[in-house]
Image (cartoon, rainbow, N blue to C red; front, side):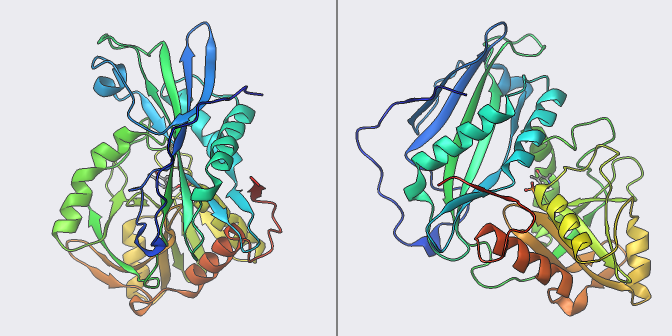
Length: 357
Ligand SMILES: *Cc1c(COP(=O)(O)O)cnc(C)c1O
C-alpha cells in the first residue's frame, strides 16, 4: 500500500465546456501523480501534486539516451455515474515488461493500480460525460540521473498525467487509407518493438510523415529483416480476415506491441466461435487473397480508436480496396462490444472492468 500525500492547488482550472472539441491529449487536469526512485531505496514519496512543469537538470539521462517508458489507458464514465477502467492490470503487467527491457526498476503492480485509481478518483470531475468521451491516463517513467555516462540511471521519476479526450469517431467510423512502408522499419527482432517506449515513436515519425505527404492516414509497417511480413499499422496492432479466418501477427518475435485491445479482440472473437490465428502474415498473402476475392476485411486495434478499419491498402504495385471501403462486420461487432463493455452498456461477462468509484 502506498501512503500517497496530497498537495492541493490554490485554484482549480476551468473545465472544458464544449466536450465536442476535446480532441486528444491537448488538455490536462488539475493534478498529477509523482513518485521517485533511488537505487538502494526503491520507490518513495508517492504524491498527488498540482499539474505543472517539472524541473529537471539538462543533463538528465532521459534527454540524451531516451531511457523512459510510457503506458496508455482510459477511465470511462458509465450512464449510472460510475467511473471505471478497462483491464488496467494488463497495462501494469506490460509496463513492467517494458521496464525490464529498458533497465528501469519495476513498480509493484498493486502500488501501480492504487496510484492510477487514486489520481483518477481525485480527478473524477474531469471524466467527460458525452458519448464516446473518456479520461486518457498516461503513466510514464523517466531516467533522472544528472550525468552523461551511458549506463542505466540510478534514479527515476514515475508520473501519471490525465487528459479528457473526445470521441474518436465523432463523425462516424470512416475506414482509412494505408500506405505500405517498404523503406523504414518500426522494430526488429531483439529490439524494443514489444516495449512501449518513446524511442519507437521517434523512429516511426518519418514513415508517418511520408505517408501523410502522399495522402494516406497511416503506415503499414513490415518486418525489419525481410520487409515481407506484416508488423503493425501506425501505432496499432493489425488484424486481417481472410476467407473467414482472423489473422494477426504473433508476439513471439518480440517486434509486436502486445496491445490490450489486441488481446481483448482475440478473446472476444474466440468466445464467439471465430477461428483466430496468431502467426506471421506476408503482405503477398494479403494481396493474393484480395486478388482471389478472399480478403474479407482488415482493421487496426488500440486504446485510442478501439477499432480502426482499413479501407484501402497501397504499395508500389498494388492498390487493394477492402470491403468496398466500408467497415466490415467483424470490425463493427468488435467495436460495438468493446466500447459497450468500456462504457457499461454491454454486460462485462469476462470481468474486464475495474471500478474506480
Ligand atoms: C500502445 C500501442 C498499441 C496498442 O495497444 P493497446 O494496449 O491496445 O492500446 C499498438 N501498437 C503500438 C506501437 C503501441 O504503442
